[in-house]
Length: 97
Image 1 (cartoon, one colour):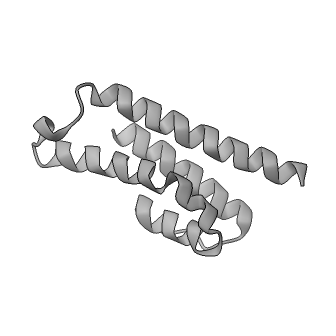
Image 2 (cartoon, one colour):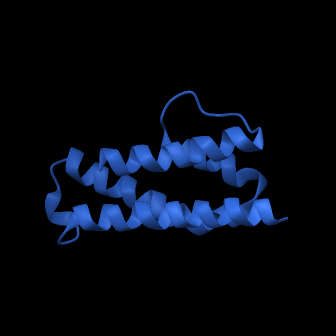
């Protein structure tokens, strides 16, 4: 879970850095996302994916593995892959403009 969250934060951090927006000092995924989406609400398309990763991590941290989906590792990988593809599409679209 930490690897998937770290990956998502790295994607957000890179996007913020390339857009010239202020980058959050600490690795708070949702704060970094709010900064990114503030200027462009179309980023809200991936908000639920980020929240899903945070939810999984919080379930594990509080010992509530029973609240996780049947195979949380696969879900985290799929969610991280979805984020990657969304960011890739946005970057490729920006280069085409």
